[in-house]
Length: 114
Length: 109
Image 1 (tube, rainbow over the protein chains, first blue to last red):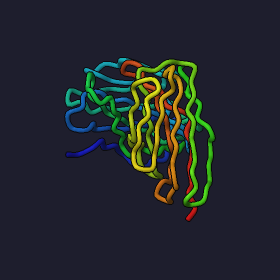
Image 2 (image 1 turned 60 degrees about the horizontal axis):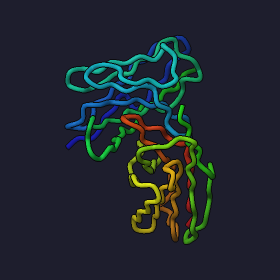
Image 3 (image 1 turned 60 degrees about the vertical axis):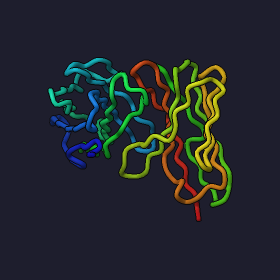
C-alpha cells in the first residue's frame, strides 16, 4: 500500500519563475492538503482540496494555486517566485469523515529559489 | 488564525534524561495531535487526544490534553538518541489542522 508520494523531491528555481509540485495521496484517501514548512518550524497551511475543489485556504497570496484531479492526486503551483518561497512543501492526505482524523504526509518537495 | 505556541523551541539533552514539551493556544480544539518529524521526512502521527484532561501513554512518551482542550504536553522519560527529531502539536477543528511552532529535540548519546 503506497503512502503519499510527492515529486520532485528537490528543485531549484530563480526569482520570477513558476513551479509545479505534485502529490499522490495514500490509497483510499480523498482529501489533499498542502503545507509550507520553513526549516525547524511547524508546517503552515496553504490550502485543502476535496472533490476537486479548494475547500479551505490559509493566509497565502494568490500566487499559490492548486488543483485536484479525479484520481485525487493534486498539484501545487506557485507563480512569480520570491526568495521567501524557499521551503519544504508538504502534501498530506486524509479521508474526509474518517474516524482517525490522521494526516499522512509525503516526504516533501524542497524548493530553493535563487 | 489559530496559533499554537510550543516551548521550548530547541532542546538538547543527554541520553537518559527526562523532558517535557508544551503546546499552548487560546483556541479550543476538538482534538489535539502530536507528530514527530525526522530530517528528510514528513511528520508522522504519534497520538491523538480527544477528551479534556485525557492522558495517553506510548511506551516512554506521555501525552496530556488540558482540561479546557486548549493546551497539551508531551513528556519523555529516559530519552534515547532515537527520540531526536522535530515534535509538532496540531490542533484539530473540523477538517482543519493547525500546527504548532515546533520543538527540535536532540538527544546526545
